Image (cartoon, rainbow, N blue to C red):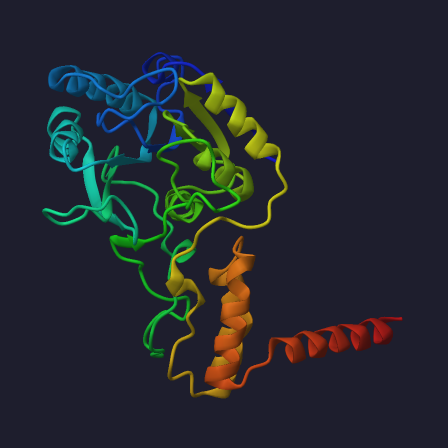
Length: 314
């Protein structure tokens, strides 16, 4: 199993200790400078201090990224435009995508519209970078033979629920990100045994995801309590990621050809629902309703075929 490690320390200092051009993927969820209490530090700098801090850690992030590497950075609305300018104009990184993470619950307002999204900027170190679309495709709504059976590009608006306080995976952290959200970034922009760094590890979501997806991962976290909690989280038995894009369970309409339909349904679980056992029941029910496809019968047939094959070999 690839090495998963978390360091208690300052992001700028610890990034400065890494070799240049050594990291395949950086996933960063820095403080948004909104005054949140992170235990041993308070997220409240003046405007210029925050921009200087952002420039310093991003400069180190650029240095350690490989030439074909990618960085994803979360940010709130107040500083997102400044973050974009630093990445593109000051550091000369290549813009790829402005992702909107849409969630269904959040802060309520009585005057004005309640916020229901965070922004994620995806930049690469150069125009030549790694992106593995087949790893993150979503099932099509309607099947068309001219399209890829593996599904479609998920687009730049991602719908994942927050990790609610009643969720058994909820950590003691004010800005915990859902595992399914991080899973998509890791699968899209890295391979097994690639080196992933999270400079603001927080609740440890990136490390937990990389642990299950067989990446090498380093987390950096300023608060020793969060480091301790992350180590406990990494030691827990894995039962599936705590969130999923709801579209991953859907089965396309118009799978009219029996051979095509059976091939698709046999592969759906492997293609879209790895690490998401909680989504399987919904998928099985939809397969039964849409195509009268019973996975229990398929499993029995497969086991009987294997039994017959083994008897023939004997």
